[in-house]
Image (cartoon, rainbow, N blue to C red; front, side):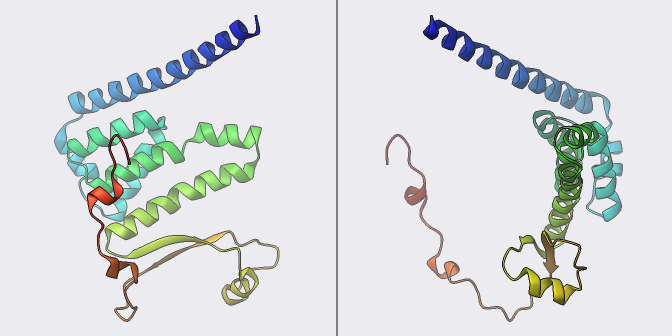
Amino acid sequence: MRVLDALGHALGLAGSMTWEVTWSLILGFTLSGIVQAVVRRQAVIRLLGDDRPRTLAVAAGLGAASSSCSYAAVALARALFRRGASFTAAMVFEIASTNLVIELGIILALLISWQFTLAEFIGGPVMIVLLAAADAGLGACFLGNFRGETALRRALGVPGDRRYVGAVLMGEPGGTDPPSPSLARGRRRRSEVVHRGRW
């Protein structure tokens, strides 16, 4: 009897996972099809055809308004790109539609805490800024700091009642930094890193 209960439970989980994935795939491809069939290419190019800050803000706003699951967001971003959106604008749309979801923020605030909602709504724009900076040819990364926090707080003038979580670093190459030693290694052959069927 325990085996049948376990089997029934496993089948129930598999069925619910299939339902969750299937409906979101259907929704994503349906919305993608609507975008490709209904939205004119000129409209997409006009709204999302370049990488200017205004365009990326529009892409983020449209993505947040769509508040899609990740499957639908990928399908929609692909459809927008195929209709003339710049790659960066399509990626900003995708990031915003999965990370700037108001309903998810409300659920996070109610079930976990407002700090998680805040992190979600700060993390999305940070990813967008990093993507836009890289697209503009700048070096950019997010740096979490757990050592040297006191010295960094002093250097940046962070008030004592605030906690440093991380920083977005951005800049142009200085030209004086030595190249990474890993560059001397060169690129490994595909056969060294890709294995099919056996090692």
